[in-house]
Image (tube, rainbow over all chains, first blue to last red):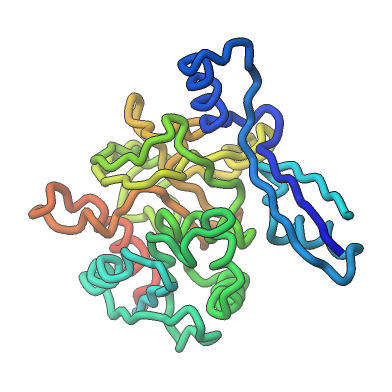
Amino acid sequence: MRARVLIRPKQGILDPQGQAVERALPALGFEGASEVRVGRMVELEVEDASRLDEMCERLLANPLIEDYEVTVE
Amino acid sequence: MRFGVVRFPGSCDETDALLACKRYGDAELLWHGDSDLWGVDAVVVPGGFSYGDYLRVGAIARFSPVMDAVAEHARAGGIVFGICNGFQVLCEAGLLPGALLPNAGLRFVCRQVDVEVVNADTPFTRACEPGDILSIPVKHTTGRYYAPEEDLRDLDAHGQILLRYREGHNPNGSVADIAGVSNRERNVMGLMPHPEHAVDPLTGSADGGRLFESMATALAPA
């Protein structure tokens, strides 16, 4: 089955990438965007979805600095 | 005594690290695919871009066969010293507390910085005195040290903050100006600046040599 893992910097952790994007948007005329956070997404085919959390904890995310959300289709 | 310097695919500072080690002891390269440390006394995990830094810096390297041996060496009390990418790898491996995040300024920084010795009672800093200032270069994009507040209090209380950037020299936004930390037992250290690039006055400073000297004297037969 198809799984998607969305990984984001934890709340409270400075995300300079998000800040840079936030500053770039008004320069292009896109006003009113704030709280921009940049993360990444991992898509994968898995046989056993019950192991996804463990995959996230051990490799896909670093739980000290990142939150993750798993979606299975 | 004998140093072993790990070489991962994507390492780029292992040769300088090897040369720095050879000034103070014997040294050889260790291959990432070997699960044997060949009897070395101290392990240096060097800078670079191990496994392309894919996913997260240090995230893949920690699963290489040599890292099992390095973790075992550390558990047995052996000296392990991670520099830059090596620091990132040791954090990912859980051998050091905290994590390294992208620089606050988002830029690659490459310059000489001053770091202050906070704790000289370790195998990495014993050739220094507390308060000594070392001039050592940094060169990284992902060097902002982070640890949660309660962990920072713990690090401080147990003398695990070994080196701090001098006021005005923090190049990356590291919390509490932390440049280098150790584990609780003080036999594993990680450091963002590159002491292996500062072992000869020809390149502007030989201060980095004192960290290699410290390890060599810590392991010298009494």
